[in-house]
Length: 123
Image 1 (tube, one colour):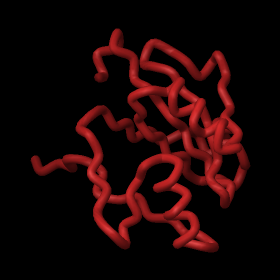
Image 2 (cartoon, one colour):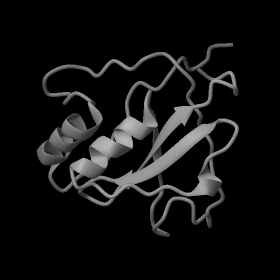
Image 3 (tube, rainbow, N blue to C red):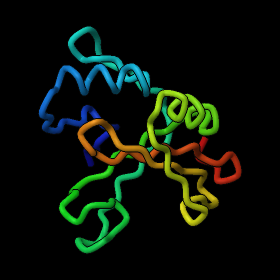
Image 4 (cartoon, one colour):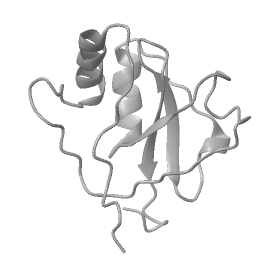
């Protein structure tokens, strides 16, 4: 059977695409597609539909939540905080699969940052 081998792209609407692309590059290191294609490191990817009435994503009308793997969550949170970006953590988000935090881009889209746990065998 043929199967998907990874995520080839994540596309979404933005009021100011150029400014938003610059924000993602500056704060998360995701290169602007106008210059080159961002190449991610191999690693786990989770695709998980949630119940339509979940409050995990934040706003009720929010249809998606992107989760990005990071190699140093503490370092990333410190850099984001230093840049004036609000970083939210909750003890219940951390689990055997790793540690998590949440930020929002300038257009209010939620971004979950995840440092997988070595113990979970996901790294």
